[in-house]
Image (cartoon, rainbow, N blue to C red):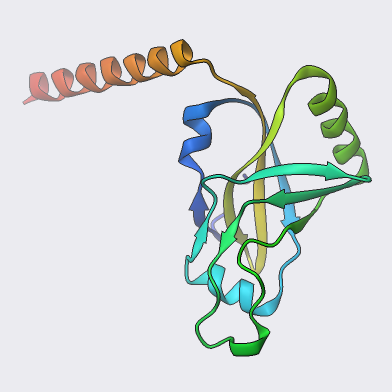
Amino acid sequence: MKNDSNIKVVAQNKKAYHDYFVEEKYEAGIELFGTEVKSIRQGKLNLKDSWCSVVEGEIFVNGMHVSPYEQGNIFNRDPMRVRKLLMHKREIIKLFSLVKQDGYSLIPLSVYFLGSKAKVEVGLCKGKKNYDKRATEAERSAKRDIDRAMKDRQR
C-alpha cells in the first residue's frame, strides 16, 4: 500500500496475518458496481474468509462479502458474488506460476480508497502451521510485556 495522504482504509483482513506468512504485497483495482462502491464507502465489507483465484489469465476475489446498499433497491448485486481484480497481465502470470508451483495462496489483505478509486491489497501468502501461530503469539505477548515494563520504568 502506498503512503499517500489520500488513502482511506475501509477493511483489513487481520485473520490473514494470523493464518499466513505474507511474502509479498500487490495493489489491484477492483471491478465494482455503483451500489457496491457506496456500501464499501460506508464500511460494510468483510474480508475474513476471502481468497483470490486465477482463471484464464484473469484474477478474481472470492468470498468477499459486500453488504447490499440500503437505498440501492433493484440495483443491488449478490453480496457474495465473485469480483474481478484489475492487475497487469505480467503480474497475474507471475502470481499464477507461484501459486501453482510453490504452494502459495493469494489472500486479500485490505480494501482502501486511493483518491476516488477502490483498491485491494493482495498478499502472496504461505500457510502457517499451528506451532508457527503459537510462536508468533508468544513473540507478540513478550513484546507487549517488555513495552509495558519499559513504560512503567519511565514513570
